Image (cartoon, rainbow, N blue to C red; front, top):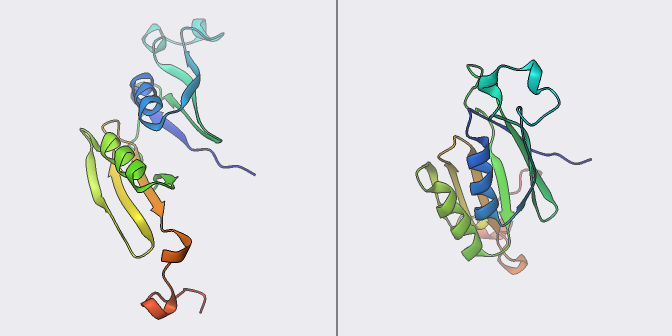
Length: 151
């Protein structure tokens, strides 16, 4: 089984995905508008430039999205797209790039569970969590004040 985030945008899906492609180092595999689809004659002309389906591949991960029909967009609520990276510098780079013109909800910093962790909502309204785990020899232990939930 594999879970794939599917984002909805309010007419700026193409711009967002070009930005994510650049920041995340991925490749847009699909970017189809309503106007370039087989259903172009079945949707209003105002929809033709809106994205029907987009797919971005980043390594083995996939992010998909589309523009919602006009007047049907709802801001994301109750979810985050979580990114896990191994390098603290890369975590910082991604965080600050996504945060540009967005809103930081938790600054990226060292935590008891991660070398780097931060949360933000980007300029397109997408909520993100960036996490860089601690190396195995830095993992918290019960002796260091971290009690495991299953104890």
